[in-house]
Length: 386
Image 1 (cartoon, rainbow, N blue to C red):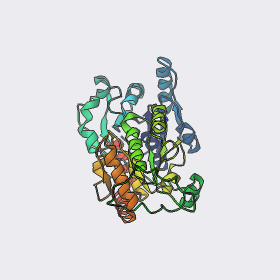
Image 2: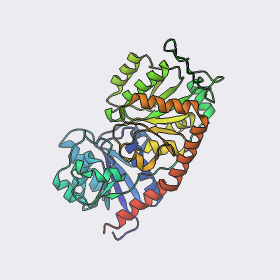
Image 3: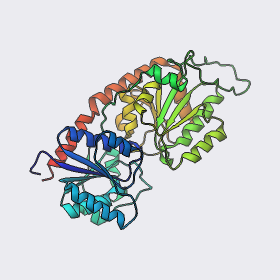
Image 4: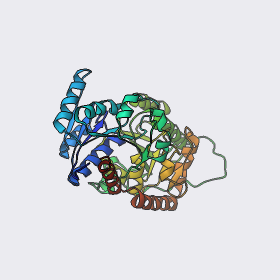
């Protein structure tokens, strides 16, 4: 490309608080640390706009409707004069293509497989304008035809850097009303139960609690409903567990309604909404759960593993490329609340298993999925476009 200092514009559909949007902010921030001029163009705003300002990341929100949005995009690209325009997911590719036509920048597209099945399929013209196509996992690359990719697609696995927690585990658990350590699970018995038992309320700081976390946007693909049904089964079996459900999205009201219907809202299922302190919440949890119906390579799983949390996940998308069942976490079938409940119960009853899976997961992410390695790989891709 003729220069080692690049002007890079990342294009995203919104600045909502999903994993992909967090990823783009971190990538742009890392690229600026490496001496590049990285900025963000978003079609719509969201909670991460404030976070971008706090981190001094230049971010432009287009807003509005066509043709005003297209005109605003054209002005943003003309001002940035990018060497590289990097579109994330197909919704952003249309506007990124406009930017390429105006600036003659190289156009890179990453398929995060975040919303496969509910997204637009880019036109042939847009694909012809794209200089490089990247899948965030091998599974995503293999399925690239679903969004119309006809040419070669390379794989750059998502990586993470560990954002340090601002508070201690004890401080966060005390704020949430949990103790420092999970209480012992009920002993298994061969005697038939007379009737389903209601699990006790989570204990306060003196008694501890067994706490899980699911940070994910409220979309059907994330399968919050499966988690809620699993939690109801655990309650009926007398297994005391609370899962912190972090995030927001279109399905929020339906999922809250289901939790109330199952009688677990605010108890087994604690809804925290959008939070900026997810690293602190991860530190306060005893396990991580994500029963998705489809995925790319979910950053939330990597972040949990990096913090030595045992993970309970489904074998979808790129997840099996990261998590080997019984080695780095527990894999359960899609749409199977009974299997999900059984896996969570195993972790509740077996602290040694939690510790073994957590330690192995930490080593896996440290060795193979570092954010620095991923950032340098993208940098070499940009520079190799000529």
